[in-house]
Image: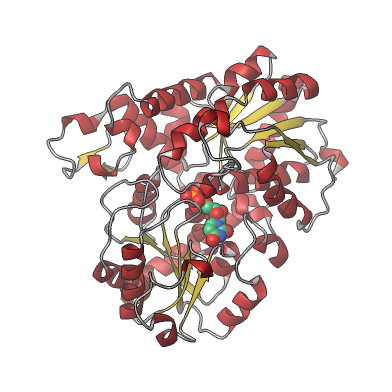
Length: 481
Ligand code: UDP
């Protein structure tokens, strides 16, 4: 590695065991390694293959001295989880989340042993592990919190917690403005995370209170974003909410060649090159890419509506569905695949998302607004149909459609973990047509291309994310001295 930039720093990275958290963490480790900073990724055995494969397929040949993987054992059964349930990807039901969080809390002792043994200079900790801030401070080690969300959502979340405007509306569907947040952003109670709408002393509400306290106790926050993309919100987070934050994204852009981009997360269910070859046969901006991330899992009735809506739109598509061949085809309208031959591809399982998004034939992205997917869409310069499901995705929808002006909401109204709100096929057809046809679509596409160039520039030498990563490394080096 670049020895001139080598500060001799060693950072622990501890991602929540979910692809949407592990993937950007691997990218962060690569980014640190490219500046000569050693990372150790702490995870559980069943998550190792995703990480080691991504590192092995990197264009830069990273060694174990650059990025090391350290395993700790997740006590699944003790916490009421099925054996081997080490990633949210294996959740069959949303009710497993509290048990999963309980299991991760039982990692404390093993984690502290690792701190004692390796004495890292800093821990980048996932916000799902709020207890880590106290563990690290026992050993005098600073923590940086990584929520994996946008500045916009960090601010919206903080404003909602501070001002609780949802308590002053008379119905779940009555819109209110999020107080304090720049831009007159509206939400409804039905779109909020359950920890805000449930009674104050549930496990979830207590947990998120602890997360906020831990954020305040941490040395600062690392954000997978770009200053120029959400300037007002980056400023608000730092200057009004008073948090120390470094923006170092888009993390996905640290992957440079096809092989590297194809190896993020699980093994793709389609050969990356095959997928690209299919896209090569299509005209620029003529294909809609439809994918809802690694957790959302729609019921069959919803999948049928998506299929019907896509067919009615007349657009070509690549659609990722969390099903395998052995699940049969009951969830598809009769004869759908036959009719769609040559027009649409269904990927059952996992797609090489970044490769697909970056292909010139891809003209729009129907997304659940997970922050990684959203930022990957921005980096690729594609306008989006926003279809938030849960987590902070309803905030991201506002950022994409109202602040950035590159999205059309499909009309999901209700926050619902895993399954999401029900959306009818007519709404799918309408949103897909709106993002693909006409002047407004053309305008959004132009804006999306401008934003793509802007975020790509941020990671180039001298760009804002490049510079802020340097500042972070300098800061950690001076703490060390
Ligand atoms: N992803 C992928 N292929 C898939 C589904 C997801 O590569 O078929 C990747 C996607 O590129 C992103 C991550 O998985 O990096 C999903 O993270 P996001 O924050 O968008 O959503 P989550 O899965 O956390 O809901």
